[in-house]
Amino acid sequence: MDHIKEAFQKVKQDIDSLKKEINFMRLDLTENRKKMIKMCEIVKKIDNFNQNNTIDTSTNRHITSTHSTHLSTHNIP
Image 1 (cartoon, rainbow, N blue to C red):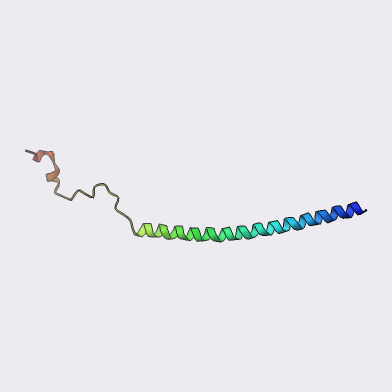
Image 2 (image 1 turned 90 degrees about the vertical axis):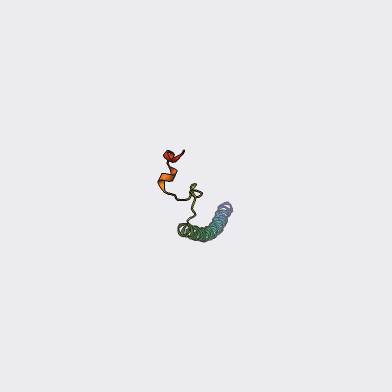
């Protein structure tokens, strides 16, 4: 009978240990969720900033606008 009692006691200890481990994992998940929410907010702010502040990446920035006839090859002597 003592063996059965000891076995049940061991199972109870294992269950308690697993419950503690699960609680720690829940805390970690909750903390990670909060961090993910903050990161998403930062990404949204960056996206909004980028949408409102576009940078001209055109490679033709150095070309000034001129009349189209000046660019034609017919005007070359």
